[in-house]
Every structure is written in structure tokens, then in C-alpha cells.
Image (cartoon, rainbow, N blue to C red; front, top):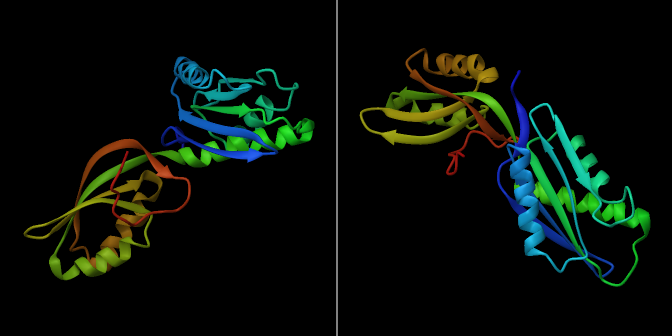
Length: 222
């Protein structure tokens, strides 16, 4: 669907050791190049004593801005491999910095490419890749006798149940991707013989998990 894209849920980091060199991968969602450069400055200030702070960032839903740097590593062994990881996973509006503390053992060009590729990958995984998709929030009203069946069904549907309220009936706030809306509401109608009702609430771009993790209560929707 036009307007959908993949980005990062949060800022995060991870690290590992390769032949005594310490690599720390940082990743952060960034909407503008200014935000990406600010994140880069933050990491550089944090690791002023590091041997290298290599980076790659992609800004714009159509990847209109793409920048990377080897920061003193041999040409093509750090920034470009990091950029390739980002491009291969089709992630935009993000910045990744891989910090290296040299451990005294040369890795060679191939070893550096592998290390910076891994540094970027672990940073992206730590920051959690999400799909920003056009979504619809609904308030679902279900009679008590039907709730167990509806609740069981939703565990297998591509939805996120944000909250439930047990009053005169069961009211559940449910998030559905626009592309799944007709399918989900059709399933609910068929299961309940049209006794479940819903009110359409706001529309939004929502960060859905890259992997299928739906049908459960979302404690942290944003």
C-alpha cells in the first residue's frame, strides 16, 4: 500500500568482540538528516576514545538521502557494508553507528567487512525493525456469551488488541491494518452472526512488528 515503509521502533545497541577488537552497534530511528547527524554526534561524543565511529544512514520513505563513512577504516570495509545491510532489509529513516575499539589484531579487509556487517545487523535487531502501515483503530463491542469465541479467533487474526473493558458487554480496542480490514471484520461478522458491532476510530500509520506477532494485548503500542 502506498505510504507504507520499514523503519526502527526505538534507539538501541548491541556489541561483540572479534579478535580482541570491541564493536558496538548503535541504531536509531531518524525522520530527518539533522536528527541522523545529531545521533552521530552523540555517539562520537560518547566514544571520543574509540578507534573508529563508522556510520550509515538513510532518510526519506523513498531513501532519498543515503550517506555513509568508513571513518578511517580501509575504503569500502565499514560504511558501505553497513549501508548494504540497511538497503537489503529495506529500512529507511534510520541511522546506524558502529564503534570500534582496536584490540591489537588486524582483521584484514574481509574480516572488517564481516565485522561491520554484523555490527549493523545486531544494532538493527536491537532497535527492532517495524513496518509503518496504514491502520484503522476500532472499538469492538461483543456480547459476553460470544467473547471467548471472539477472543480465541483474534489470537489467529492479524490484529493487535490494545485494551479490553468488561462492562455491560465486552469492549475491545483493536488495531487493524487497512489491507486486512475487510478480512478481519468479515471473520468477526461470520463468527458472531453479525452480533458483534464496531465503531471506527482514528486512522494512522502504526509500527507493526516486522515478524508476525499479532492477536495479543499490546502493552506498548507506540
